Length: 567
Ligand code: C2E
Ligand code: MG
Ligand code: MG
Image 1 (cartoon, rainbow, N blue to C red):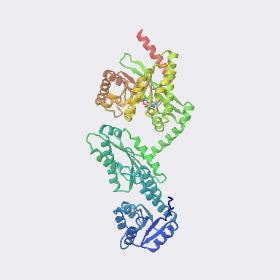
Image 2 (cartoon, protein in one colour):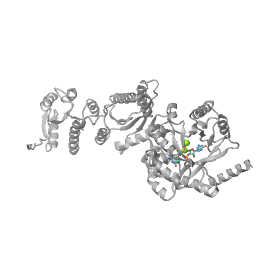
Image 3 (spheres, rainbow, N blue to C red):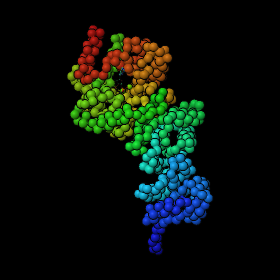
Image 4 (tube, rainbow, N blue to C red):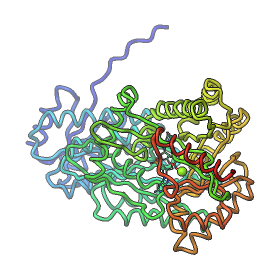
């Protein structure tokens, strides 16, 4: 059977205003595009809304009217389950009324006098589009767990506010949960869900007191677009308090990034900035709130530049590998045992750029693999060169980034590399940071097992800066534990810090692995570590990271000393 083609009726618009001139002007603007009906007070309007509720696309509603005003109409419509999906645009001359109307459920505003005809047309069209779309996708526009807006809908809305209300100073706020995966892992998903719902509820409560919208952006990230606040700490405290009240033991910490409104910055960019501010405090125990400022903007410009320059840096050999020795301190005198390969970037205009600056950047966009592969290859080549040239076979550790873990060919590539230079697998040691382990525990354990089966040794880097529990540690396959340098820094003048070092050494003993203490700068630190039973040390006390030529001289010198001592 052939269906008869349905003729699409024009969309129906109700204009409500007690002043005839206003009704006329709006009618004139819209009549070429829509079918229009009119009411001159709230009472008439409600009758027409009831009558046409299945066809009405939008209501343009004056607020101040005799008989029944616009607020009463809004209230009535909002509380009626058959009517509350009809969008209402408020016609108003004063801003305070606008805000109240928005809180009461108005979809948008048109300001009197009606002079910008194109703007009015565009707004009416947009609201209809949005509300029709909304009925179709109403499940998709909300996050089912928190019932907050989905990301797409949120940005659609935020862009609209930005475009149509240029005088509203809307800030972007991003809220995140520190180590949410650990919260889930330790307390169960159900508890994790509860945390997310509570945060959603509290943000909603906050937004009932001020203007704004919110969304759960991804797992544990909440975005809030709200009128400028003078005190975001108060908002963070309020959210933190609700979350902390959920459990005495879970110890959940929130962090917040804020990007203040700027006229020329669109919401998406503003949220990128808030997110960047929020990421800067990841893992920081003291700071939980960061506001995006000029310094961060300049840093972003620098970051962009570095990202653009990487390819050239590789081609022009601006990247070089430095080597820092590790010494066995239980020997007397301490004996050179291995080295760590550390990348350096000699930028032609910016000078020496620290890996602390560019590594996280390239981790963020995936380019780190290119950098790491370069370093691994260079390190393997160097081990072979020293073996052949000066007859010393020194193990070298290279750093793996958390992104490398996702490379399915990692094991194959490393294996091919050591074979290419005829090296024993144990000579190219692999450092993996503790946080990379905890970010992806299961995947990581599996990968590390494969690499160890291949013959590689794994060192856990920056141990103590992350969140691994003893329980987790005992399942982690590692060969060496590298204690984070923050532990060593104050052992000379803090009894408590020295106790912590002893705790790390005990953990290593329990795991039956040796410890490398990083960041050893003084003789006193060295002596204390030796006394406490730490096996290996790396730090400025012995040497800074050195370019290959200088490091080669260091090896030769050390070997001479060893020979002299043996003789
Ligand atoms: P890391 O692997 O923990 O490396 C040790 C860092 O401590 C190095 O910083 C080293 O120069 C520094 N250091 C060593 N001894 C001392 C000391 O006595 N005092 C102080 N204050 N610092 C000391 P660097 O070279 O700036 O590297 C920073 C981080 O960048 C490294 O931390 C590592 O996580 C990463 N990195 C470096 N090269 C690479 C690489 O080729 N690939 C990857 N993925 N990451 C790398
Ligand atoms: Mg390292
Ligand atoms: Mg380290």
